[in-house]
Image (cartoon, rainbow, N blue to C red; front, side):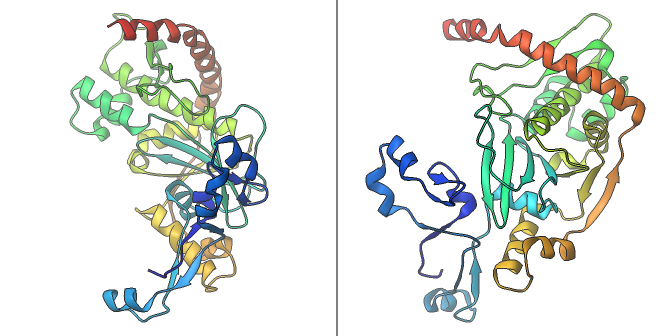
Length: 331
């Protein structure tokens, strides 16, 4: 469209970028055995913008030179479009994966090597995209004979917080899990079942387990946000948003836009073309919030205890994952 071959900093962040220098790392290229290929990589630019070429302009019916902006990729643009633009602001994408992310002022390159660091205009995004999110909801709907995800939330509300002692580990992806820990052998479990439990308890346990993962990922960011912006198909569930508020202890705020990633790309475009002084300034003028869900103090205390139990059960079950892997290999 412009005749220029470039990469924006978010796309270039993995696997070859030195995040602190915001440039390709000769050391990383060498580790991959690709030092010879550095000359083939596109130039990295912050908020790349260039004019529409004459040929592309004629094909599109637009004036030549119209600014073309390369925005950050999906999860990064979604964070910005949700209004998470300043250090400490957090976003959770309730989509095919659960992606819990927070804006930070410097890349976090120490600790357990999980999650990803993404360079953004003026900062960084610390993100933890899981392997299993709303696919778990769809799986549970099929299991319980429900026709749509909204019915799962309604059914879950028939069970009390804690799901009658049921605990669910939502690691259902055949690839295991990658955030906030990495284990290709990780598998899901529904723990504590007895004849006393019914469909509503299972529904609530599944939603609670998914929400525990959001809290787990949020803790792994190392940040202490004061609110959590949410987006994605799962954000349509009032039941789930209430659970997220109670489990994380944070007010949950939902943007008015249906396509939050597109809004984020628009904000970057405004800043890149000089229509706004920064992405943060663009967000202040163009991000609209629809509603907020406040945590219930009593349920928050209960879920603090249940979250600690969730981590204990997860650690205990992790010892069985290698054996389960062997059983799969023999079946």
